[in-house]
Amino acid sequence: MDSPATWSGYSLSERDRRWNAVRAGAAAAGFDCIFVPVCLDRHSFPPSQDRGNGPHSDSRYLTQLAAVSVVLPTDGRTPIVIGERTGPTRWIPEVRSVSRRGLSDSWADPMATALLDAGIERGRIGVVGLAPGKLAHVRAVDGVVNHTGFAGVAAQLPQASFENATDIVGAARYAKGEEEIACLRRAAEIAAAAIQSLQDTARPGVAEAALYARGMRRLLELGSEYFPLTLQAEPLGRLRYRHRNSQLGRTLGSDWIVEAEVNAVWGGQVAQETQTIALSPLPDAYRAAGQWQREIFASILDALTPGSDLADLAARINSFGGPDGLRASVSLQSAGYGDDGPWLRTGDSPSAVASVRIDPGTAWVCQVTVHGDHDRLQLSWGTTVLVTEQGATQLVSREMEPVSIQ
View 1 (cartoon, rainbow, N blue to C red):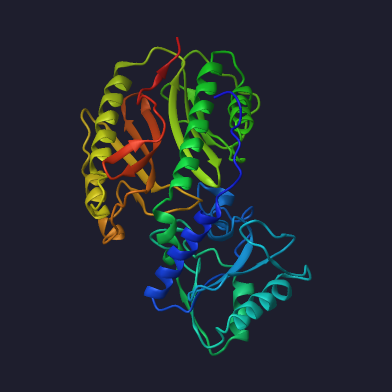
View 2: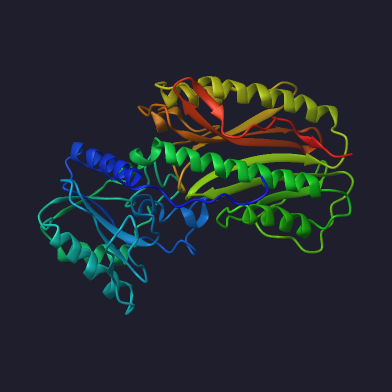
């Protein structure tokens, strides 16, 4: 992978697939329309590891535009889109503008007008992002809707009912179409290429800031949207400091461990790959941890079977018991536009994902970390996997091995 691929955006048929899926879910729930109000500022409110991708993921999913409001009638009419400094696109031929006089004045009035123009003044309105869901905004404990703008809309439609509908759009986002899967695969390939660049660069005597810059350069030159690397780097046996920016004045040593969590974004889809790099021969304890790590990952892949209940998988994640004092922490989260769900972690109750099924076309970021008391051992590895009719498979081929550079 030497240069960025070209991509002309999602097709109109992909747009219609998404809109129809959301309309069908909304109609089944008895909503007259789906409403995505203006959401919190994505730069000052990062509720998840997806950072700025999370708060505006619904508007981007429905329109390919960030920071817009959407009114999508359930009866099949074209959605009304409101945005600031946003022009028409192939997906959205018309965007209503807002003024810049202040959030309450600039957003509440045009959003309320859009609902009134759609004839929903007495309707049942499903509001996306009003609260966290099982399938979207799983880390945003208070939702992502801007209260001022939303309250201004509700005040102008006193006879309408506003109810949470986060998982209506979340359900459509959960199972990916062919174009989305292709974008996720490309994102995973970019992330893997950045990891390879880090492996090629990491040597004793290299400044940690230079290592960080090399990884970020590889992501960007291959066409990923900006998404900061997450690095941990310390001498073997120390608890490592996790950071998302370059660290000046630090130089890699001959006995250091580097852990890289790399996210790449293509077509809005976020894929993640994680790798541990040792700048020394691996101690036996790490080799034993790596073997158990592989067994855990194989067990998770085996359980990601179409039609299975996620609660069973959550129980399996909680059942992993380690040899020789080792313990594991597993994170399994649906991949997509940002802050997607479901999200399963070691220690979470299976009831949190009860009744959610594993569907073909779902993609997951799986990260397995093994901890141990011996030398404060920590060994992480992760990848993005796709569930097909035949089972789960990695989107990019990478061996589940810590890399030892001697």
